[in-house]
Image 1 (cartoon, rainbow, N blue to C red):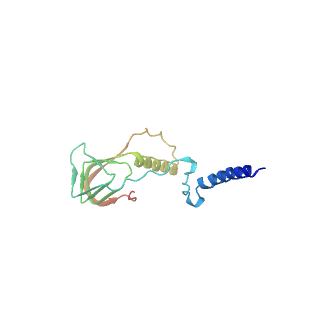
Image 2: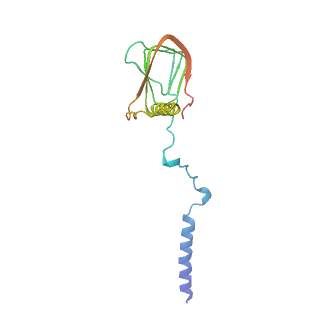
Length: 160
């Protein structure tokens, strides 16, 4: 073989090896693998943080008052004859007063949690599960508060 042929083959081999070595990301520089939830399901939903802050507000005393609890921080507030909505977000209600008819519409993650707790309660008592809930329909709970109740309520998770 001539010196030109050997030089040409050396150039080609060097170019190929250089290309392979320079285009590869070192193992240490690669990102860590993401954890894969068991059975391929999605991870838990994000919890919205506190985004609305109020003090000393009285809400209610009329029908049709909707109070979203998700993201609400309300110090020394009063909820009277109110309809609440809750979908699983953060809330902080220090020194809250409740009175009258209080209704809550559970939606999203909150409704799913309520359904799971009901299923577990049925299983614990030996009851057969009832019919499945209607998809994307809030769960309505209500209470008649005869005497004003004062207390502090907050969600156990503060959001992200």
